Structures are given as structure tokens and as C-alpha cells.
Length: 90
Image (cartoon, rainbow, N blue to C red):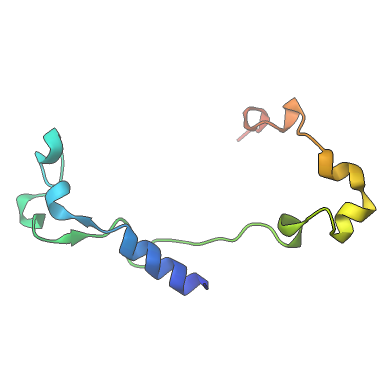
């Protein structure tokens, strides 16, 4: 499945009935105006979703891959405490 098909599937799957999003729905005072009750509401605006694939061949490594043979210890590597998200500065 390519990016256009993924985007189409996400746009379709993330539509919500307006009746669930109008003011007062599900006990929530905030929401869309009552005129949206009979509409399907998009989660994202057209062209408002960007699909990014992070990684390359390294994301598909297996023990039998060239990287695994070159450095067998890498398959058992564990992140250090410094690798945690709390250590990343903005």
C-alpha cells in the first residue's frame, strides 16, 4: 500500500459523525454548531496530513542481515539511560 492509499484510508477512517461533535454531545458543552449534526466531519483538512516513513534498511535488520553478521553484539544492545527521551533538549 503506497502513501496515497494510506492517506485515503486514514482520511476515511478518521471521519466522525457531526452528532458526536456538536455542542452538548456526550455531556460536553463545547463543540460544533448544531448545523453540523447531520454531516460527517473530517479530522484533518484536505492535504493536512503528512505521512513520513522514518528509517531505511536498518529498520528491517534481522539476525541474518549483513549488519548482524558484522556486529553480532549489536543484536543484544540495550539503550543506556542517556538514550531516554528525558535527556533530549529542545
